[in-house]
Length: 341
Image: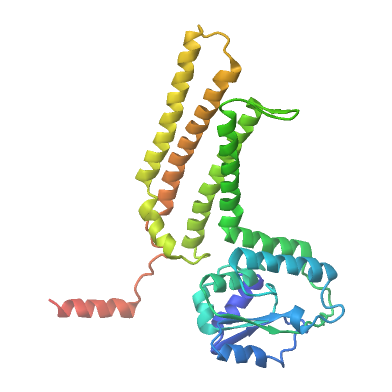
C-alpha cells in the first residue's frame, strides 16, 4: 500500500530498536543532532516532537503561508480540540518508542498519519515532550510534491472527523438550545423587537434548528462508535458503559413517546379543524399547534431509526477472520485429543 503513512508504518513495524526516529529525507533536518530526542526518550517520554518555531526556520525553508498561517492555526486547533501539549503539531522530525508505536495502533496511510500519531498519543495519555529543531531549506533537486492548501485541508479534515464533539456535538447542542428557546417564546405569540416582528415564519426556522441540531447530536454517537470499532479512536471508560444505558429498547420508548405526543397534538389540531367545518382556520392559532406536533413526530421517528442503527453498531462481532490452523497446530490438537480419551 502506498502513501506517506503506509511507508512510515511499515518502517516502524520493521524496526528492531527500542526507539524510533522519523523525519523527512529531504535534507531539511539534521539527523546528526538527535541527542535531544534520545535524551527525552530515555527519560521515559513516549513521543518526542520537534519544534521548528523554537529551534529556528532558515530562510526559504518554509513558505510564509505555512509559517504564519497554516501551521499556527492547525497547531492551535489541535491543542484546543485534543488538549495536546505539542506546539508544532506537524513537525516532520519526531521520536517515539517501539512500545508507544504499538500502543498507538496507527491506521491511516496518507498524510493524516502525522496527525493521527499526535492525537492518539494525547488521547491515550502518553508522555509527550518537545525539543527545539532547526528546519533547513529542501535539499532535493526537484520541487516538493506537497500542496499546502490540499494537505492543510486534509489535516484539518482529519482532526475534525477525529473530534465529533467539536464537529457535531457542540454545534448540535447550540442549535437545539437556540431553537428550543426561540420556539417556546414564539409558541405563545409573536415577538416584537422595535420595528421587527418575529412570527410563524421564524418559528418554522427555529423548528428546523432543533431538527438539525438533534441530528448532529445523533451523529456524534454514531461517528464515535464507528471510530472506536475501527480502532481509529481509543475506547475510553464511557464507551464501555454507553451501550448499557443507550440501547434499542430505551431508544424505542423515547422515540415512541415523542411520536405519540406529536400525534396527539395533530389529532387536537384535526378536532379544531373539524369544529370549523374543515374550512378556513386562524393561521396564527393552528400553526402554533401544527408546527410543534410535526417537530415531535419528526424527532420521534429519527430517535427510533437511530436506536436501530446504533444497536446494529453495538452487536459484538469478530473483526478479523479466523485463520485455519497450521498443520503443526492441527497435529498437536489431534495428539492432545487422543491422549484425553
